[in-house]
Amino acid sequence: MQIIVEELRSLVREYSQKIDDISIHNFYEKPNPAKWSKVEVLGHLVDSAQNNLRRFICGQYESTPPNILYQQDFWVEANNYRQAEKKDIIQLWVLLNYRIADILTSMPASNYEKTCNTGKDTLELRTLEWLATDYVKHMKHHLNQILPGSFAVVYP
Image (cartoon, rainbow, N blue to C red; front, side):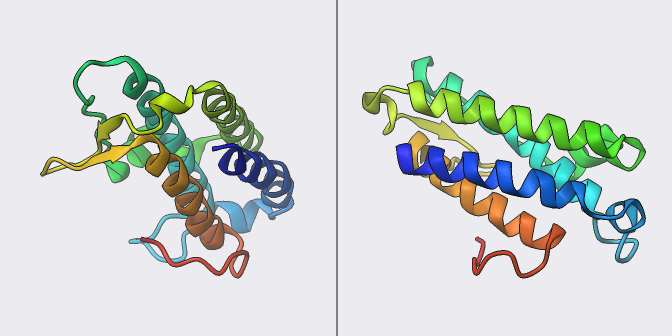
C-alpha cells in the first residue's frame, strides 16, 4: 500500500502544477459537445476522490460490504464544473487526494482485503487494496485526457 500512496502523492504534486499551467481557454474548452472539457475531467477526478474516500473509510468498518455507487455523468453535471474557478478545482483535487493518501497510510493491513460494492447494476465487490491500485490507474487515464501522452496506461 505504501507504494500506491507514494505514487498518488507524487502524481498530485507534479500534476497540480502542470494542470495549473494550462491556459484558461484550453482548460474550459469542450473538444466537442459530447465530451468533457479538461475542467470537467478534473472535476470527475474530484468526484472520484470523494466516492473513493468513502469507500476507503466505510469499507474498513461496515459489517457488510458498503454499496458506494457513483454515476459519473450526473456528478459532473450536478457539480457544474464549467462554472467553477480553476484554482478552486485544482486545490480541491489536491486536498482530497492527500486525504486519501493519509487514509491509505493509516489503514491496517488487515483491512486491505475488506470489500466494497462498486457495481451500478450488479454486485461488484472489490477489495480496498484493489480499489487503491485501480484509483491511481484511473487517475493516470484521466490525466492523459488533460495532458495527453503523460502515461502509457490502458484503462480499464
